[in-house]
Image (tube, rainbow, N blue to C red; front, top):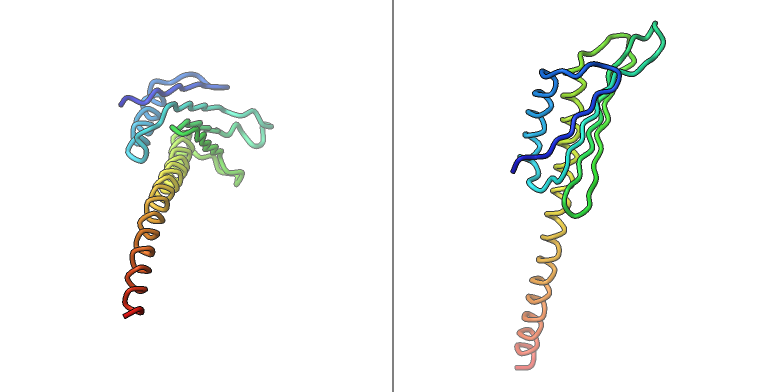
Length: 137
């Protein structure tokens, strides 16, 4: 399935190199979750005072089947060094991968819990009747 990705830029020029990087990372998200409906990526260069420079920010909004909406929002750290835009994008997608894994694991556990509880219930009733027969003899 080809994931629909919408990329928007704020405060900086559109770049084919950055577009390709984002599309590559977005394609990797499908390995973690195959039912992604939408992926919106906003890349911006925030306007701060001249002393702090113009740090980058990358926000990813993903909509997954069953109504889950996930957000990853990464910014450059305010430690005096400026991370390249590629690192900020990489960190945002890593955060989104973790969120997708969490949602997928939660969905798997819900399904397993439901199926396991019914099978345990059947075993319990089957064992209960067998125990009664043994104790009556």
